[in-house]
Image (cartoon, rainbow, N blue to C red; front, side, top):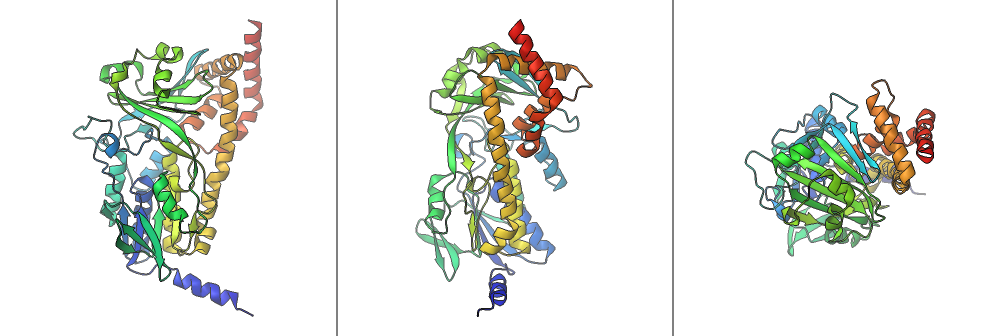
Length: 449
């Protein structure tokens, strides 16, 4: 009979990172940078030196597609505070605008939701150098800032694209343009939703499958400082429009630009133009000349985490693995990156180590997204009903006007769209008796009048 305890112990020893261990991080966005920062800090705590190489071919100093990571660029107030606790304070050069309210626009009217947390502010950032033609002195991209912190901590950044991985001596070996670049003790997949890179890991045969995705539409609109200040101020504008293909849209102020993000189904190159032509949008902002749209793209968004995100010496994090549904992917990047780093440094890099210490956090995001899907289904139903939409708006208005109100519905929407709270913690609030009584009372008034 085999002694499984001894065999397990031997495998654990084999998969414990030693001094000078090589770690290859594929992707230099927030997930890869967070992993590298925390892994290096933790290694120093236990007296180890790690050789971490971040492979990222994109130049985050460039404007337009060359430096962009195709993201709305909203950092939740919770993440801002969490990073501050970690000693990562966002400099003024990174933050494009501080956000203190949301304005909700529907075909039945508009309302505002102010931040319920006076000491906190949402930050809007650019993930690269900004839209085409916009390189500002004194400004820095969020991704460049984080990557710089990782390098300062001791990581090495190489602008190479990894195009092949194969195992030699039970260790993954990385190649770029047919040239071997490193034999790694650990490979961290932090590359986002990119079909080409995902296929490399699928080809390794350990069960990883590229995440299910949906298409979003993002556009950068040059409106000028005066118009942005006059019409947007420090508010993000949310639109629930009666379009079956648009789940919701957001217009996010960033200096002289506004970032437009649209989520829905059947998103195509004409979606942005159609949205800007909608009556609800024209009521809120001035006519937007289409030639003022400096950049536009149709990025993919992860909506389904892979069942098998790790194996011996390989772990997938962030968008390559499990991320938050529709919102606050940066918090998921922080959470998965830090947890993977903690597992690798303090536990080990075998499949068993990741299953025991990394997977519970990974799975918690998957479970939370199930609650998110239910919440978005409810929002979807409500926006399709004029009567229900009117009732919802009236409840929010009254909550915002009454300083002593519990503001339950306002908090539900605020936490959903800022990413400030987990979906599973928001979900029970939809059953609040008093809020539902107020909501159905307003719906009844709408029916009568």
